[in-house]
Structure formats: structure tokens, C-alpha cells
Image (tube, rainbow, N blue to C red):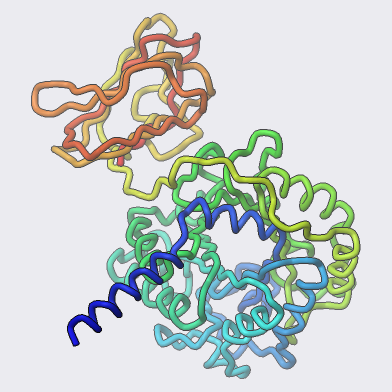
Length: 457
């Protein structure tokens, strides 16, 4: 009997191992999807604003002809391969059968689990399923000044557990409202490492994507498995320089959520969407997701349906794209250098040392031009275990050679010494060491030297 149990255990482990893919395989598969449908449908659909009153009653959510199968067929008519639905937007209304709050679609006149209808409909049409989830939640007071880290993190995890255990395989979870300049909820208040690890524990093959390109440099995967660009917010991918697996998003209508003028509004030009978005982005390791907002009945408008059919006539999915280049693993740990005390060689004007660890990539510590070998160091506040240091230059190529060190007791140990990598974001990964301080000594540089951010993880 013991041998039978052992054999079953080993078989289960082998199956799980075979099914779990590497991150690079998942990133490649995501880019190979090429083109999908974003579906912003939630409480803002029933408001005049995309940011409605967070205490708008559940009774306002009242679709009369909800038909997710129509959405799926519309996506398929355009050649799309997947959908992504806003399960919870910034005002906190949940459109699934959640047990975490009564502010949900089951308590509305619709009395329906929209997420269930959506995943079933898209899978029936052979389309992959992704979910959008907002960390910012103004109804449940998960917002600046009100964060209760443990309580709110547990609340979020309970909601994510429902979504990731009750609706089958989820290709990607697109997260919003977290560590953005406008949401102001840090990765420390709601722990990114904890949420990231939790999602992967439930669905190892689910990509975690945070819409944080407004803050983080485009040259590295900071807190996301896929680099994401919200084009309407001015985030534009470089089709000539991008080497990361990426996503670009845009609404076909004038706003993300449905508004009363939309049935007669002029939509974005379909030829422009194909020739200036889908095609060039697909050739730059980037998946394009087009938002189509359902109306208050729960249906997509005729003009949107017609536009999708036109796209399907102009563009045909040619299958897998070119291989995505190997890239550094996502940076997902806690940055223990953030806001810690710094020391440094002479700075230029007001560009003093704390600008290099102020969690703001638009500011920088700037070395005085007269200093031949500038240096910068950060005090970690005691002996800490570290295994990654990131250095982000204000301008790529100013550092030519440098030495990266850590202090342990009374001595400095070298982690790296040599020529600077030819990239703006330099990542140094190493076996864990105990460090009290970290120091960068720039031994050769080209004129102006400025460090935007140094992270220690």
C-alpha cells in the first residue's frame, strides 16, 4: 500500500512538473497571442465617470441583456485570441460571486456572476482568459492614508484566491492601482513580494502584470512579468528598442468604460489600429490589447462590433511571433535601500545623494564634474541579507567602469568590478550575503554622471 501511495505521489509530482512552464516560455506564449480584447465593464459603466462615487449602491449595476458570448464572438471576429475582464476596478465593486464583501454583482438586480459568464463564454469560443484586478479600492478604503497593511493584504489575497481557484486556468492577472503616481499605494504597504508569491502558489503558470510603466524604466521588468504600456496615458513602447516581453493597451472608444454618446461616437480608425499598433507592436515582442466597453444592457454597441469585424478583414493572426530575447528575471523583492541614509562624494548643485534612493526615477544624485572617482553608499540599517543590486543611470552610458561593494563589519567586499553593462538599468545578482552598507565607486565615466535610483534587494 505504501508503494502505491508513493507511486501516486511521484506521478502527481511529475505531472505537475511537466505542466509548469518556465517564465520565459510563458512570456513567449503571451507575446505569441498577439492581439486580445480588454473589457472594461463594472460599476463605472453605470456612471457618467470612469471614477464613480465609491459608495454608488450595488443596485446601480443593472444589466438587462448581459451576453458574454456576444463579447467572445466579437473578439473572435477581429482575430483576437483572448479576453481580459475588469473583475474589480478602483471603486471596489466585484463582479463575481465573492464572499469577501456584499458590494458585488450577486447583490445587484442582475444577481449574476459576470466573471463566470465571461470565462465560460470565451473558453467556448476557444479564447484564452485573463483577469484585471485593482489594488486601489476606494469603497473598501484601500487607498492612501487608510491602508491597514495586514488587514488589507489578507482581504486582497482572499479575493484573488476566489478568482484563481474558482474559474480555471488564468493566463495572466493584470493588476492596476498599485505603486503608481496617481494611486500612491506602495509595494511596502501592500506587499508586492507576498501577493506575487501568493498568485504563483495558486497558479504557477499565471503571469503577473502590474500596470506600472508610468513609474518604472522601460529597460527592466520592475514588479511585473510583462512590461505594460497604457498608451492613452502617454506610455509609448519603442518598437525599435524594446527587447522585453510587452503589452500595449488602448480603448477603441474615447474612454475605458461605456458612456451614453458611444453608440454614435466616431471610434478609432481601424486601419490605424492595425497598421500603427497591432503589426508594429507584434514585431517588437509586444502583445496589443484593445478595449471594447459593453453598454449598460451588457452588450457591445453595433458600431464597435462593426469595427471589430473590419479589423478581422484587415488583419489575420499569423501564429507565433519571433522568439523573445532572453531577459533578466523580474525584480519582485522589497527594496531595502529605499529612503535609507546615504553618503557620497561631492554632488553637483542640488543633486544630492538621497535623490538616488528616493523611489523616484525622475530625480537623480548628480556627481560634481570635478570629482574623478565619484562614490555613493547607502546604510541598510543593520546587517541584512541581500542578493540583488540595481543601478539605474539617468542617461545610459555615462558610467564606463565601476566597483560595487558591500560592507560587513569593518571591511568592504567586492561584488562586481569592471566595465559597465551597456544598458541604463544594471542588475547584479549574486548568492545571498549579509551587508550593512552598499557602495558604488565609479572609476571611469563620461562627463556628467547621474544615478536615478539604486535598489538593494
